[in-house]
Length: 200
Image (cartoon, rainbow, N blue to C red):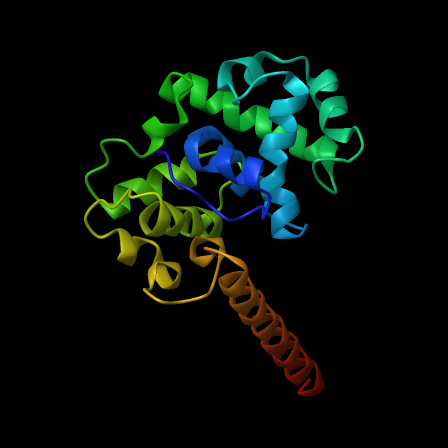
């Protein structure tokens, strides 16, 4: 895994995401309730604060919880909810140590089908069905991980030439398109909610 991603829109942070499987997983974990760029810059910020040039699942899993939460809370904070996210990141790393020998890439290495890969991703702490499908689509579209049936397993996020999620962002232009799609989805959901409310 050594590609150039454009998820944080910051060269150093994107470089780390492209070469570090754990950084990519942590970025995806952080991608909720904050702007995408903020979330995907998080792994780089954590790496720098730990004093290394990559994230180490064993190191994070064994880190004293309060100290790790403080590390994420230092300004600029890694997330809007740094305390709860610190806990989730440690849970993810502990799971990787227990099940994959601390090697995040083993989550997808050797998978024979998209369904198997999706199951593995959904088993990760903090990865619900949607997050797992989006990350599967990112693996397939940008990181060259394409077991049989990966597009189908990724659902709508696996569609070619779509602009639904981080899996489709390759630069500023596609970022704008994905943002527009998300705004449309939010507006549609809001309108549907209003229609249901008025129909009662």
